[in-house]
Amino acid sequence: MPGKLSIEFPTTDHLQLVLAGSWLLKNSPPQAGDVEQQLTAHGDIRNISIDAKGITDWDTGLLIFLARVYRLADRQNIDIDPAGLPDGARRMLALAKAVSPKEGTGKHGEEAPLLQRIGLLALSMWRAGPEMLHFLGEITLSFGRLVRGKAQYRRADLLLLIQDVGPQSLPIIALVSFLVGIIVAYMGAVQLAQFGAQIYIANLVGLGMTREMGALMTGVIMSGRTGAAFAAQLGTMQVNEEIDAFRTLGVNPTDFLVLPRMLALILVMPALVLYSDIVGITGGMFVAVTAFDISTFEYYQQTLRSMEWTHIWGGVVKGTIYAILIAFAGCLRGMQCGRSAEAVGAATTSAVVTSILFIVIAGAVLTVLYQHLGI
Amino acid sequence: MEMTAAQQAMDPDAVIVVQDLTMAYGDFVIQHDLNFSIQRGEIFIVMGGSGCGKTTLLHHLIGLKQPARGQVLFDGTSYWESPPEVQQRIKRSFGMSFQSGALWSSLTLAENVALPLGEYTDLGAAEIAEVVSLKLALVGLAGFEDFYPAEISGGMHKRAALARAMALDPEILFFDEPSAGLDPISSRRLDDLILELRDNLGTTIVVVTHELASIFTIGDNSVFLDLEARTITASGDPKTLRDASPVPAVRRFLNRGET
View (cartoon, helix red, strand yellow):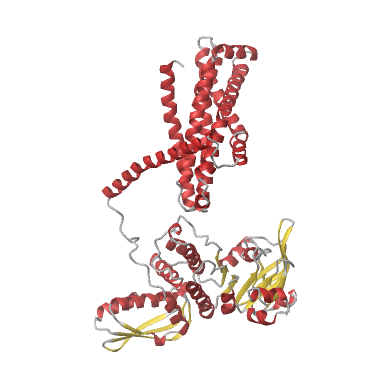
């Protein structure tokens, strides 16, 4: 038999709840709404008693009903006589009330008005600047200690990081650079072929890769591959209190964790940019040789003729600046990470967005600067 | 003391029967030839020193890890020989509270407890909110509904995880070290709660713990996993084992190293 509730009035100030049947949650037992109605209708009720002899079985379904009745009675200062309840239910309700509810947490507040939210957002963005500068300062101090040989870090960590950042990212860099080389060659070739000047594909690809695309593509790949990994590693360490453990030990986490990561990426990046340049030029050569009837030797000679050392080191310098920005953004977001799994995800996303933003701005500034300096 | 596997399989009151269970990571055997049965409405303690495989055993019982050998039977049905639908049905009768809480960090405590209710019951939003408040109140977390797991302490994590495990009034509750990290009063209240759940709702409760006070207060039956022998060296009522176990290692464990 499903749960049944009847409400009786033995006297005018006394309400009796008669409960019967099966009060299992899955059978949707009666709700306390009826009791609430009766209590509002009869404002002079002072006592509630409960007769639960007819209950066959019960679980949370009964308990939530009783908890609600107790809350209603509390609000109107009505006494409840629990004598008629099953012993177990009475004890479980007592357990539920053993710790008084936490109040004044401000958690139930309504959403702040629009202006206030805009203000808070603006303030948090305003504070982001000094935080970033603070981190930059710590890294600078850390590099100072490195130069004086006083930085606390492990060589083995640095070597492992170099291996992870360098050799292990070669395949993806090769793939992307080769395809970029092919794309640049094709785009240019269609135009150049109109003048019979296909041989200048070599100039286009050579200059394009060394001055811009090599550094840019490597930068974007490294921000997705390495910057994100730095943020996730440091963020997880933040969640596990590992960074606090370093601080407690008197080991500077910037020295121990951030410094080797920055160093690894900065040391490896020039080589990666050169590698990307070479693979990209090979991609261009592949197009020129297979589709535009230029011999490998011609292409090679033309590339050498068009190339100047300034193009090459200009690109490498750009790439190295990107590396500093990527490592900075990755480590910054990792160290700023909150204390939950979700925060690690947010830190990783933010690291990639920040570093790509940095790369684009730096790329634009450097291109203009190079133009003016005649590089 | 020990029943044969066949006798246990016929035991009508046993909810969980473990037969010749061997647990291993690759070639590394953690525990071998485990045989025991857990009766309906029993509070069953899995004890043993650190690193002996208690949590691994729990993971085998709840179907997270596949046994290297042997069976885990629920009401006579072998979990690992059942098709996925049956496994799903068996799992629905469990509630599990993990060692470090395992609360979903992107959800508030209320949402954590409400998720199983929303997925597996027909309750409306208002009823779910009532159940959530009650379960949180039962573990002493009334008023913490809108907190995120990152905003509460470690002990609260654990208690919120219990509330989530109890959400569906499961037939079997698994607790992995429920009282580790709780203050003595909360820990005592937790023991009371476990006893009430068993007495009133008939819940079968499997607890991994080495909290001696708790073992003697709530435990009806137990197994002791030995680190050296890599198998069960004692089983039965923990109070009896403490005073009269023939195995010295078990007596030492239950008397805090004093024999």
